[in-house]
Length: 327
Image 1 (cartoon, rainbow, N blue to C red):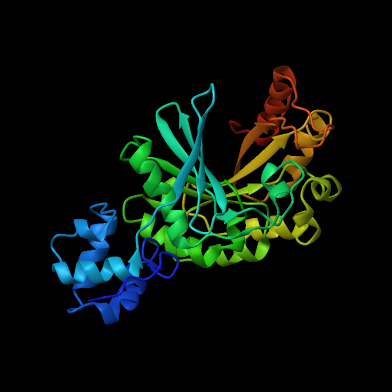
Image 2: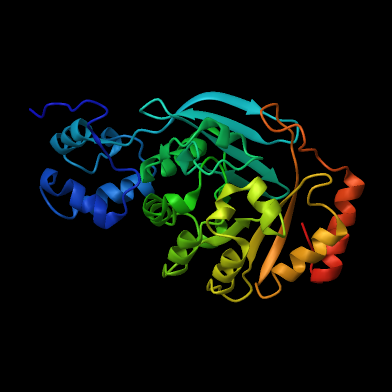
C-alpha cells in the first residue's frame, strides 16, 4: 500500500508540460504511455482529480493521488464591480494571497492573471507594490488560476489572458514558459499577453522563444525623470535601453507591442507629453492603451484621475501624431 504524502510534499502536476510530466511520473508508471494518458486527462478533458481518470488502473490512481497534486487555489473572496469586472482573491497552499480578475469587454472575456504573490518593483501607482516582494508563483499556481475560473466563472470556450495582475512576469519566466505551454493546449498564443514594467533582460529572453505571446509594456511617462518617479525599475533599465529592446523584439506580421500609459492629471497628460511619447517610440511598432488613473486609499494623494475631457484631448493629440486609433 502506498503511503500518502502530506499535501505540501506532493508534487504539483498541473503546470508541467508533457516531457516534464513524464519525467516526474516515470517511477510511478507501469507503462510509459500512461504519461500521455494522464496529460490528456488533465489538460484536454479537464480532470480535476486522479480518481476521475478511469482509463488508468485503480492501483495507479491511488499511487498518483498519494504522491502528486492537481490542487487549485482556494477562492477566499469575490468582489463584483459596477462595470461587470469581477475580482477573485485566492489563497495558495502556503497561505500566500493573489488575485485574478475577470474582465468582460464587449464581445470577449479577458482574465488578468498574477505571476507573483506580491511584487518587488514598487511602482508608485500600484497597490501590489505596497504588499512587498512576496515570491514567484509556480507554473501550477498560474495554470490553477485559469482552471479555477473555468470552474466558477462560466467562461466561454475562447477568452483572452493577460499577465497584468500581481507581480512582474519577466521575473518569473521559467514558470511562465511552462504555464504557457500547458495553457496553449486550449488557447492560442495570440490570445495571451505578457505585460512588463520594462525588465529588459526578460524582454530579450522572451524574444528568443520560438513561439511568443503578445507583449505589453507599462510606460507611463515619456522621459526618465518622471518615469523613474513612478517606476523605480527605470533606474536600472532607462527608457533608451527599454526602447532599444522593443525595437529589436521580433513581431509577426500585423502584430504590435502594446504601450500601456497611465494618465495622471497634471503629471503626464498634456499635449506636449503626447508629442514626446510619439517621438520616443517612433521606431517601434506599437499600439497605445490609455488608462486613466483609479485612486486608492493607499496611493499618494498627488495622484489624480484626469477628467474625461482632458483624457479625450490627450487621446486626440496622440492619434493625430501617431496616425492610428488609440484605445
